[in-house]
Amino acid sequence: MQILIVEDDQAIREGVREYLTAFGYTCVEAKDGKEALLKFAEAGVDLIILDIQIPLLNGLAVLEEIRKKSPVPILMLTAFNDEEYKIDAFSKLADGYMEKPFSLPLLKARVDSLIKRHANEFETFEYKNALVNFTSYTAKLDNQPVDINPKEVAILKFLLENEGRALTRMQIIDHIWDKSEEVPFDRVIDVYIKELRKKLNLDCIVTIRNIGYKLERK
Image (cartoon, rainbow, N blue to C red; front, side):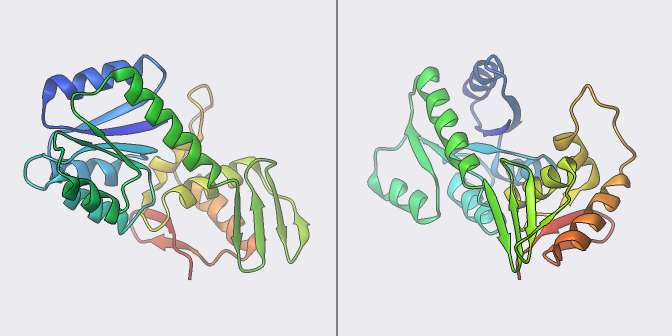
């Protein structure tokens, strides 16, 4: 699981990264709002820890921009007790907030809970006459079983988790293929996408020229 930590205080940012890394999370860091949006666009992120008071573009503006593209869980950090900031964060669809100072074990508990809750949202995928179960790795079209490859299922789930966001072929490979596996040539993703479209009539998988693919339900 990859977490984007957006915090301008280097000590806090590095402390959170070191703590979460010790529990198996992979962390990407950003020190301001513009860098946060850039890192979000580059990396396959499963959760964002987002401070409100950051330079160039504040956390609420970053939250608003990301929500235009993705339902990724976002935990806000704030030093403010003012209810207006909390109301504003939730109105822009934050998944929770923590006030500074906070304990690292409590932060991890919130992260674990949000990731678990978010993962459960994607147990199945229904689109027109297609149904995919990500738990059993099975699929149906017009209520008839479809022979589907596990990698095809994993790719579809990754696209769904990043719905509306363009993913490069290498982002998909980095997320789906285990480090112990032989890394395929990036164009192999084209083959898997072609099969998904063919087997399940998924016209919702859109080709982004010179970049890769995104899932966009019509």
